[in-house]
Length: 389
Image 1: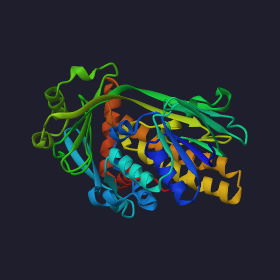
Image 2 (image 1 turned 30 degrees about the horizontal axis):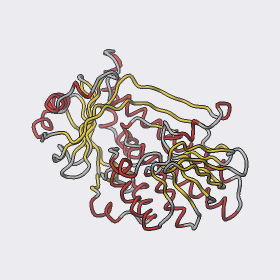
Image 3 (image 1 turned 90 degrees about the vertical axis):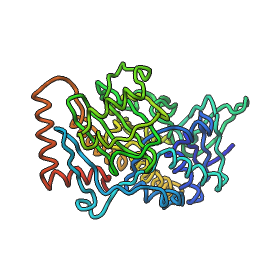
């Protein structure tokens, strides 16, 4: 086979890129290791920055998002058993965030991909990029028991932290930065109304807690837990009891509980790979960087990569601009590091790392400053809604 761009990974970033390439009449093929049902069922984050919403409109996949997405005009910070709302729009020229599950984003982009009738191979195994340091790269894979080869101009790795794309890059060509946090998040999804209309971040002596939503009838809750904890250790009742203890009393009393649809424990890490361009192989999303979920930036940061990437690919193919590829890496990484900083900062601010009383008082002083100072609220708000592209 022959195409212009091979995209490895059919998550939201890969699907968004494929649909945008279709708009530009740039031929592309997507290869995905998992089956379509698995990809469409993955439970992930659900807070979208305004730039992400705008890109969904740009690509023509925002009909359900416009109807079902829940606009959040603020975010809540709880500490010392008190909750302080932080307005978003007032500090950011009207920018807001929208609650809409990543699962739904993926479905919308998947449906658009089907309409465009571009090739997507779900269940492709043994995917391997080759010769991407030359101007004649190609990708091999196995599909339905048959071996295939796709010759192309560009390979884009949207296959996540554990994917083959970054793993195929020689170690001499890449530099990585990583921080592993000494705790995890135990998450519970339930068909219950959210305890608050907008996201709540709680710093409590028992540990961090987060109250979020997917809709007005589906909620997502998290509590900080040990890295070696197990889901089996937590019944639904035990989870609900624990999160109540970490919330201000007014919230705890209004918490509606119910059976879990899904429970899982996620480790937290910050990770960046530099550069994001290796000849004709480009990385995007979790293949290049990971943020702790505290700031709800993972999906949004992947979409900002695609914003810079579609511009670079358009210049590469339309104007034969070879400098567009390394320039993509520079532009994307500038925003990546700023977003990594905010996610790291918010994680440090809202979690209990140890029993250091001085450190905790410093966090409480910082929380008091942020919530009582216009400058502090503005800084939090402008980062939370997403920095400009």
